[in-house]
Figure 1 (tube, rainbow, N blue to C red):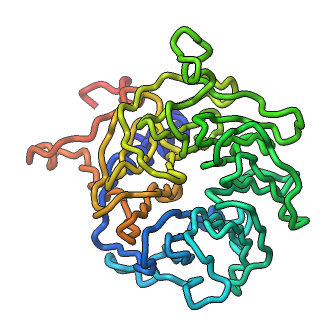
Figure 2 (figure 1 turned 135 degrees about the vertical axis):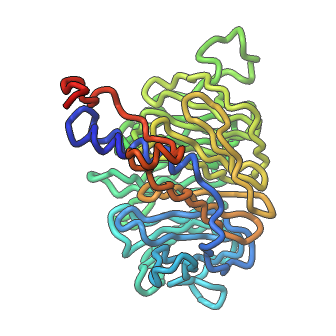
Length: 400
């Protein structure tokens, strides 16, 4: 740590290098925090989590019981042991509650005064955070598996919605109506994600084994379909041409810079794609158990070097190096299958929810204080901090 600070002060290192190094160290040291609890409100499995990016303080959760909860993640009592309290709940006693399982919750990207939820009751609701009442309700013909609103859009307020219908629905928040459909899939749409880099680029995944990328300004169909064999038809059976997986594709996640797209399928594989060209990077993550019938919610770290991906895998969360596919660790703590995980980029923390009705907090281990580079520490056998040769004094003589 001291060597990083010195190198940054004298201009030898990039100012962001220390931040990346510390973020990486924190992610690599994640462990279950027994001093931090999250209020247990859900009476059934936790399907989805979302942390708002305005303050990084409030987290939404949606459960199979139809309940939506808002948590305050801040430690208000300043003690090591504390509980993340529920500060708002749309419970079973509310007349506005979803009738069936809540599949996706998302904060409005630019304000914590509003959030959006979608459910198997064939509705998507836009909520006022203050009153916990829906300001707008969208109705669909089939179960709603997922929705997503662009985190970077300035020219549109579209919400992409995946339902049992193969058509991807686009709903406009301003007009309160469904304005367009994207046709191309042949099965139910299990996951949708807007690019964090380009506001008009949308990725969709379906039970037909295909992942399509769209420019919603175009009316002539998708830009391209991801092909796991990169166009080599000699490796693909006739029915597997232009498929991303050999099973249902139920997980999508862009990297923070939008340059890469992760997909997960029920063939127990994860694949990393170049989002601009659609090329399969062929990173091998090995076998990743995935038996989910609905959307599997992956998470990718932000600000690390290298970046990491967090994948629900049975009752654990598997942590992989994004670009090499190496398994870094398995986070174990749940008693039943994990369905979702959410990364907090401000503190490099991870929250996971599962069918055991629990939300667990995975927190970095505190850094041990650096040993000062003095004769006392060396005499006692203490390990001296490594010194960057770039700022070793090479001019003074030993006699000075």
